[in-house]
Length: 339
Ligand code: B12
Ligand code: SF4
Ligand code: SF4
Image (cartoon, rainbow, N blue to C red; front, side):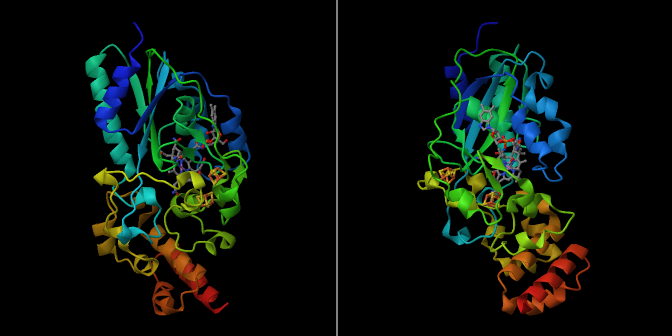
């Protein structure tokens, strides 16, 4: 089979609405980045990152005969005043990005199958066993900054990634990651409230508020981290907000990233969320991952962290909530108000 023309693939990528696309050879990934990180315990309890490590490191285990990985980046930056003070990280304020990216990838795969029916492909968005930052770097879309995020020239780090593995060659491959533009800057490392950034783009998930507010649904958030949850309820953008390479964000016209009504709520309103409001506001957004009690628990921590005395009546009510995690969080927040 002759190599697929990248000019045509770029055109198809644009047609389905990806903002950046690049091409990398499907070579195995040196294991140290992932295995060293897992061995150091940086994955916290996200065991799923280790269980499919072999596939993450070698895409030919996902698609026999893999030759090429196409990496895509999608800009999600929106800055509507009504959501500017939201305690929800930017990427999660609109429709669930998984479905937005999955739809684009599905459309791209359909076009590839029509144009090149003999080519097989394996696609993944976020939760699949693909190291998306590594592929985006190899495909020349940017590089991994000291804040652990993938930084592109046109959009900074306000991009979401996805990737597609093909069992065909393409006619041109990128020469590797873009030039590292961090230089001597350490702003993100100094600004991370919980010391989660270890240098060289390594993130200790155990200490990252993004992990604690989204993935840590079973255990309590350690007290030394709770006190840093100032206006942080789902995800954390601090190490991106302080980055000088994010100073000129590009506003995406993609309506699916437009903030939904939930992004207009403050911490107190989220702590007081009723099951009816939850059912009305949360389904279809990424916030559903934290579940009803997880979201309220986080909001309650945030009320305690900022010692909001006007929240006392609400916290007293929540200290008798049927959910153990909300109850414990409210009892802690009340103690913290008085400390
Ligand atoms: C697990 C995970 C998390 C964990 C751990 C974070 C981490 N940095 O590992 C937690 C829950 C903390 C998290 C948080 C966030 N996440 Co997250 N997360 C992932 C996930 C599922 C896997 C990441 C992973 O494999 N980590 C293991 C480490 C060892 O690998 P790595 O992250 O790729 O980093 C190493 C390599 O890239 C290597 N490297 C760097 N350059 C190069 C070049 C080459 C050639 C090679 C070989 C290697 C290499 O060095 C890095 C450090 O060792 C990816 C989706 C995916 N399938 O990839 C999303 C992903 C990384 N997350 C994403 C997002 C948006 C976030 C948040 C911004 C959300 C938020 N606002 O709260 C935060 C950012 C926190 C931070 N500062 O990084 C986006 C990143 C977008 C971007 N522009 O970078 C991704 C890609 C999801 C997506 N589909 O878009 N996340
Ligand atoms: S997302 Fe927040 S807690 Fe995590 S590394 Fe960045 S600044 Fe630190
Ligand atoms: S804040 Fe500075 S060190 Fe951190 S990612 Fe941005 S440029 Fe790099």
